[in-house]
Length: 260
Ligand code: HXC
Image 1 (cartoon, rainbow, N blue to C red):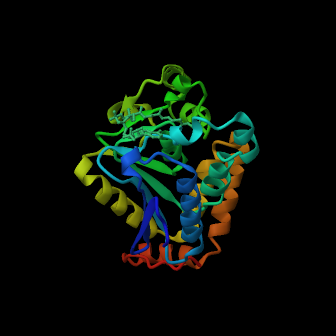
Image 2: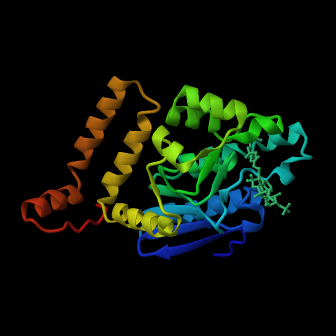
Image 3: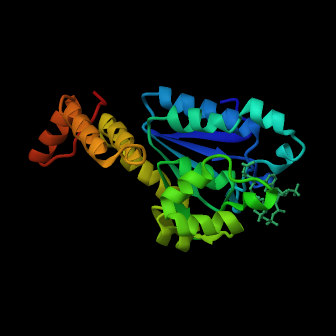
């Protein structure tokens, strides 16, 4: 609604968000960030939406990075005072408790790779390419790349990619654990939307708990994480959806969930 550089489309309980600057390979400028923040806020607030998919318009790119033309002549003081990249972490990562999937259709470079890694998981087309080429521009990654890529693929491959700017293809990304699955380009969107619809049909509170708990694995010592998991498990046993889910299993029928 009122967006210029992204589009949003509701498909049942799934929200499809498309980065839509194909002439600039969907480079992430300030307007893209603000529109995405608004789209994610709408998504989070709408009880009718249960899962989201983010993809890139066009054949070539998911997003080829932060917009280099926008950054080229900006002075350091601007970057420091505006602290724009912090808004990705606060408004696109932390503020979004509901699940979302990145459907990576082409280049996911720099900030584009970093946004894909902000998603709960990545489904990639076999034409996807991932990389953190920032070092060539005289800067390190600035939207989480050094942290999330390292956690996803381990130190050796992350260090090699980040120090050299080398891109990896979808197959290498899958072997390294960066992406959940690789599919044919013409199947990518349908596959991601179907996966999102599957998640959207799950008990919504359990979905929130699962996402919170997997993310906690990156923040908490093992013992605390396991206690946290047990507590959320116990909390979920008080929900109507747990009654329904277990009754549906026993009665050999599909469950119908309300998020209560
Ligand atoms: C602005 C970009 C862009 C970007 C591509 N374009 N990437 N504009 N910011 N990140 C524009 C090009 O300028 C060009 O516009 C058009 O998109 C098509 O791109 P081409 O380069 O002509 O396409 P191609 O030759 O096929 O090469 C594709 C590519 C290359 C390999 C993906 O575009 C590329 O290397 N892009 C930059 C990738 C990158 O360095 N990303 C990291 C950015 S920094 P015109 O008008 O000429 O047609 C970052 C981290 C930020 O993300 C945090 C630290 C500051």
